[in-house]
Length: 243
Image (cartoon, rainbow, N blue to C red; front, side, top):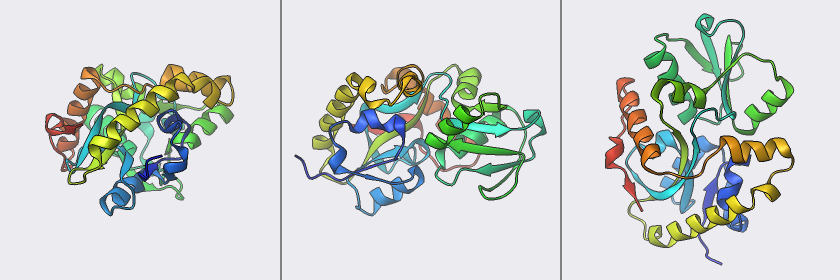
């Protein structure tokens, strides 16, 4: 087995992408993965989209965590009207979903709430990953904005939440890319065994997609344009290096 060190978020939606590679994987919150890749602690990381658009990494072609409509696991929970939200508490594990939330609220809907740490009281809360799935299961009637659905309604495009990233200067890329694409192939075929129940299987098969093709890349380019409107320093999506 290859000695490559793989970094991944500890979420259900990532499990099909590391199927058969589990012994090589270390788990970290998504927001930590880019820094651990930069320092060489890991050789490849399932990098959130915001960091992937920095231009410092090469991305593995054809593989990602994608939603083409509702994603279910990235949500803004709020009481009353969304327009009435003045403060938002942010899940501590994310930066990219926060950037997507800013695009939806500020660029598309035209209002600018105050963003607070997760421990503070707020009108709304941004939840991601398994925490979001658990909340939805326990609160099926809660008012919420599904960020994948919000993006699709505004743009008509899929959203790539994460992609495999490697350091551009590293020599591992050409060996890692086929390994990760093969893991995806195995994992997609094994989703019924990965899921613990019907709800998890529905999530992995109906809401989460794992292919990155032309439409997904168009979504990346659109997101990069929206981030530059917010003042974020990201490259044009067409400048990304795919391996």
